[in-house]
Length: 437
Image (tube, rainbow, N blue to C red; front, top):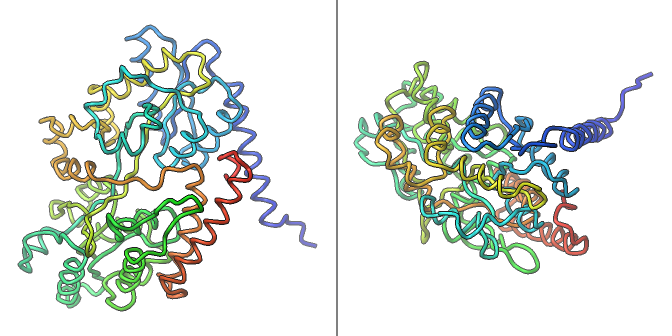
């Protein structure tokens, strides 16, 4: 007889074990006599954060410990939510994905950093859209991310298209032409690769296709999605895969960041939508496109302006910290010019500070920062509200159905609106933003 547990039960048990482990680590871990900074990442990233914590201790005389979180972003969020819902004093300081900011601010978990914080070195658009809540500065950007258009400079020159496209219809025209001409020597060659699989990256791409007049419109009873700009964007995304065929058939089943990067880096695509991290990998010795790549802002749709979806990490202080003043000093240290520059050179993190994008040493190491500065100034976050994670999951499902030709744009967006409205009503009844997790 088969004694295996049902998959759903196994997943539930695994999640419960994870949450128990996180609860124990947060309640019984470091911090009884120290300031605690919570950070996740790879072993090399955590090793550098340990180095920064030691430097902060030496400089300020404040005992500080690093609480290591998992590499997985969702596990990091769960661990912080557990501690903050319980009102625990540790961690005092933590990094937050931009997508969590709505939950953390609406829940009242973040301490006001104070009026004395100098915000002038930072990107003002990012601050006002993400880090300022009800007139108070509750976080600061440490690492910025935004969607970029990568392109093959050599192929555009070769086929007499000297500049990257500024509008989506221009990209389609150029991609279609060069794909056709390249297919004789490269049968796998496609004009444009992007992230269309059913996950968070799909929402980021969708917002960029929709441009400045599309995306999520927050209303009292839910979210408006079924508008002309969004229908047009979805139809265009679908056509890139099926009708125009300038994007691989696997776009809506497999294409995430790494799949897209690898395809472009192998020399098999003209344009690529990806995050800034791909730049260094494209320039690596083993890359087929080394020295052949340029970056530009995302194209603009008809009757709209270019939009890049904002990503990245922000730092804040827990409202429940019993060392708030020391915690604010740690925030100031991490967001300082010197530390942000070290994070760039050691981890490749794009600084949250705007002034570093004019640093001569930085530009020598990363000349694409000229383009990044322009992109970050106009980057737009996903909706900042407490139940964004659930809204995204609903939207991903319906948008991906359109890419798979299982639903029409208007039908899918209308159904998404209904599902999101039902979610909003549940949230209003429950009253606690974190209960929708």
